[in-house]
Length: 355
Image (cartoon, rainbow, N blue to C red; front, side, top):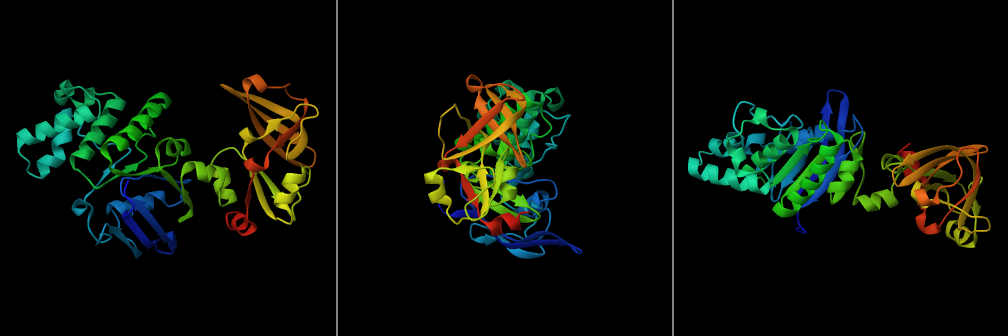
């Protein structure tokens, strides 16, 4: 992966009459990076991708591809390609004809087109015999691979993906997530992937950009965003989480040991703790931070068990433990605890800005 950005977005704004869909956003994408852009419906993902591929023009701001400004360049003149959710394949043409289509538009010789199509079939792990197979005879997963092969036939500098796996069943989606990640590694291309699925983004990407109301809330590797979210919105968007409002180093119902007290002395904000970081303490066992409650509900999650623990006068706490560490069911009293290394404190201004 190169150090210099292949794509730069500067103060990008898009307005539709009185509605502002994007608010002056900035972004650098590194050459060879796999960037996932994630956010809820209405966050601006679709608007952004349409600007990046050239389907729309920005109201203000600039888009740079390497050293060339491209925000006014039409889509068919950009060295980029889009893989749509609908795939947009020609159903009554063969796999080979679909893959060769962009090369045919460029007037590449038939023999060269076929050779390239066969190379791409091998790259996407489809047999050479599929060259003559009709698209409407292909399975959903095979169609996805053909769409990827056709996109790569353009030899684009950047591949954009608009939720290409959202219509597939769970098992096939999980298989193709791994294949996409592997394809990215083998081609070295820059991938920019739009999705509403946080799970997809975490499995595949080098970095995740989380959007809310036309702005980036946080851009970082998945592990960093998960462990150190910048705002309450990001913390909640990244999965199950326990949030405790802290004022001057105190949280009602939480007992802080010496190490935790020293760490949070005088601090105000929102304390973030993931369910898997909360332990169910044995009698006499100590923790940096401890709290008590009554198990309200229990859910089996394969190798793990999730508990919702009710607390008097406070929000319930979610705890996840391995099945071998499971305790009694609903109605059982428990003492919970977590270490300071599992905590992250969101500053009050970040918490309020995302509320």
